[in-house]
Image (cartoon, rainbow, N blue to C red; front, side, top):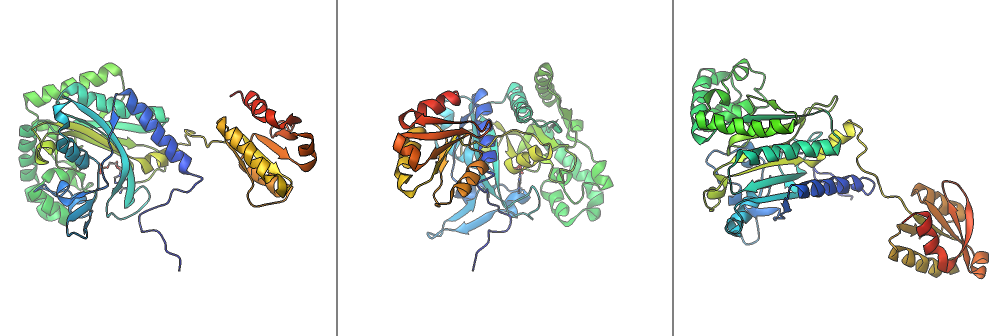
Length: 422
Ligand code: AMP
């Protein structure tokens, strides 16, 4: 019996992997411009890396894949990238060598969510973390980076939304005020929000069930509770953004789902027609307690993550031609089984010269081979027949112009390199 993939997962098939590769290459190129270095951490960690808060997000309480290994250790497949990066930052004492560590990661995460378009149980994120200092210029740099990235990808209908939760004091005052505000409305809220009201009322504003509720719509915003320091910090972030003239909007109700943020939070939203409900492409914010909670010094950081499936869906929805599948430079058609070794050598020589080439391995007739060559969009056909071989030549046909020339076998490489201008 054939076995199917796990619900909420997907396969990247050979004819679509070039899109993933192109996206990953773009990520590496652009992040390199911002002097970000890649970090690779394991996809599984001790559960404590994620399960450490008293106020836990849904992602951690309800959606993680937890299991015991054969030595009865509690492990978790990572649901997000930040915690593992911080665990490694602390474990490797990266703070001793750099005041600010600017890193990025690319990789799969796992969340037990209800699968739908743009929402999977295994999904890819790339993310950025800048750990070690608190500076409004750095918050701005990450927002500029996120904006720059989506522009360079070629996405148009995308909005950058930002907000400030203020320092921890402002955030706590706001949280208290929000709680008091919602208490009279408790019975009207969904079951999850009733719990959130006690544990972390900020997350009521993110609720997918209650977001249209009048009480949620009229709730006070973090902006109303920013103290002087927090206000000044946010103003500086905006000063940095304004000088670059990137476009953004202030979203007073934006708080983000996770419970460790303070000061700047932001989200990148796709405003693309027909794109669907999962329209948040990425987001992030500043955090103050994460490093110390994972056993490190009291250092803050700021980070964001983009969902890569959603980026690809957005590119498709906007018909952005951002990647091209590599085409074959040459395809060797062999007429005679006895000449196959000659073909092997021709291919080897061409590949040494960095030409992309292939041949037929299934002994089809000429017509079948030609069909395959054209399907693979080969630019040149190298036709190796018995008669030609006796003369020491092959026929080389340009598939666009249909012109064919005879070329001495030792000259094939030079001929093609010239034609292809390589
Ligand atoms: P989060 O880590 O929840 O802030 O998510 C950051 C981004 O990751 C989101 O904006 C999505 O683009 C993406 N993302 C989160 N969860 C999923 C999921 N289950 N499937 C696909 N993409 C996701």
